[in-house]
Image (cartoon, rainbow, N blue to C red; front, side):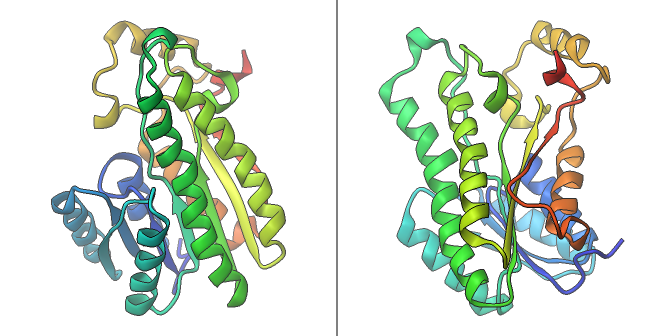
Length: 248
């Protein structure tokens, strides 16, 4: 399918894992891709080449989403190179998996700075430009823990609940020209989750009605739908890509 033919997409945190899968899926759907990264330029360049191998334009853009000025400068660079931004995917995220007793103020602040403030800065910088232009779509990445909560990852779950709420607020603010939606994936085996124990993985799989883990491509497929015209009458919504885990 080429549902995003001729579109320009900016994906934050796109040098690995779910962000990489999103960038490649949007490219397969016809979009040119701006690949945001924080420090890993080598992998960002590799993802850019994968996009080019699919016949689309791509360029990495370094920026710390926690810094409003850095975000605005990145958006300007993306628009200078591509001309505009039609799709923004707020994927950059961080997690400190630790019990409540071990959760420090520093870890709490860092989690919210990346997962919430960074998403807000990017959405504000791009949403205003979309609104003033020909519109567009913003897709945020939350988590099942934004609905369930997890005492062993309390800052992360709280931040992802905030992402769901921000999605609704931004959807109201930027309608009708800009649609804002959210995807909340389940546990996904990526290098970010390499520390997870085999016992946890086995328990999670058993508790999932569809009896498997989410893949980065599962989340990317949902993002592609929400970014495309197939979701033209959908805004302010969160799609749980969790194999039915939250049904319990």
